[in-house]
Image 1 (spheres, rainbow, N blue to C red):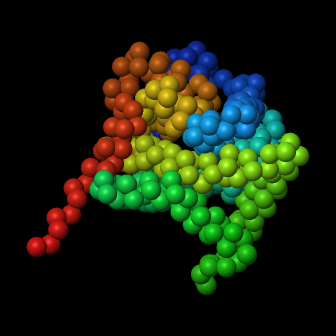
Image 2: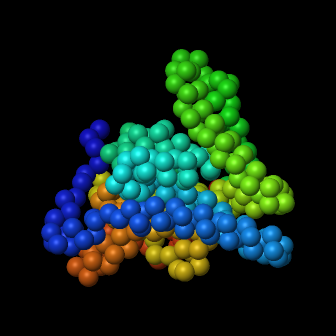
Length: 318
């Protein structure tokens, strides 16, 4: 099947506009990684200081862990720094590895997703193809996420692959094991460092309650919401303006669900080399031109979830 259709930037932007919105800044790119860890650190410190804040810290930290995934995603596009070594270091060791991701493995996978977005060859199609589903089915998925079942299954598969277990015969076992180890080993190293820091500060328990617990619960749920919002039940798989979705996010949604402009996904697919910190500005320019009316844009995550869970419940047999 041919690659997904593309849009030329200068068909929608003036040359001056495009030069502005496509301009990259190391200060912004690398600064967002620092910002993400600062938020995580402050949330952990606040919850240690006042344990009743743990209930608030867990979703804040879980959202920033998704933020780390967003920043690894940006590094896959070379968008954190114009210096490739810095881009890859911040994208892998400071963004992907702490949450179990591997920039090296993710980059070719993700670029294939862009090349064949919503086509049969899209490796992410499995995330959107099942929708719409029933409300009951979505509720079960969210319960599995919030109770840690999804996290356990993912980590078990990842560690099993790293050890060469559960890899079916006929697949390239050595390559699969190597890819898994490239994620697992840095994950263990970075989490070990974090555990050591918290232990030296006299708060070893915070690693489990304020790092692993958010990752195993809230982060799993909002990662699912992100996947649903980006490509599920889109109106046209062949239209580059409508095979990905932009979701307007309120301040609370940006804090707890959609960090670092991840909600501007339609713009990201239209122009995948736009820096993530300029996506909102690009959206405003397109809105002034009336172009967003032709794009897949929805208001809020609740509306997207309602559409994704719009399949009628099965009628019980009589």
